[in-house]
Length: 249
Image (cartoon, rainbow, N blue to C red; front, top):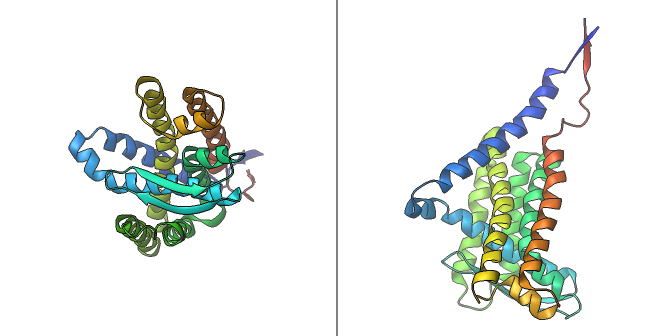
């Protein structure tokens, strides 16, 4: 008796891996484009990641009993979230941006396996629309954020309806890669800002509340982000549940 893997199992194992590799490869190629072209092509992605980052702050505030005043995405791709929180749990609110972005990317990988590619796209669309309607309506000059959230949600929902299953899987994988990689690259930029400049950022705000230098907070966020990503990646690439080897003579 010679054991062989069921072809269905082989496909279930390899397709997510191929899509994730392709999404990572496309991301690498886009970053090698000349600066002006790369900025244009990746601009919607940057707005998406910024909205996820700011929603991480907002969710962290709500989960710790705080009140979100508003979140805002600027045309240059930066963002800000204003919330009222207790000083005792402010560390959760401040950490929610970078760590929350990494967590969102890992959740996309898990949702891919549990709910399927098209369903995951619809969940992303619903999340963006909910965040936008809850927290992007105030102040009244927040029209760009409202439009950004609504348009991104509409595009992603349309993709869930019109793309084939594998193309939907590629889009989800691509968005997951953007969230995970941007969380880490933004933390790398954060390390530069905290050591070479006096620019205000999340790590500086954290050090103003708690007795650790900004660099240490940035490093801790990076470690925590990687710790979340690795098991999610392993789960995403693992064989589908319920698949068993079959014997072949």
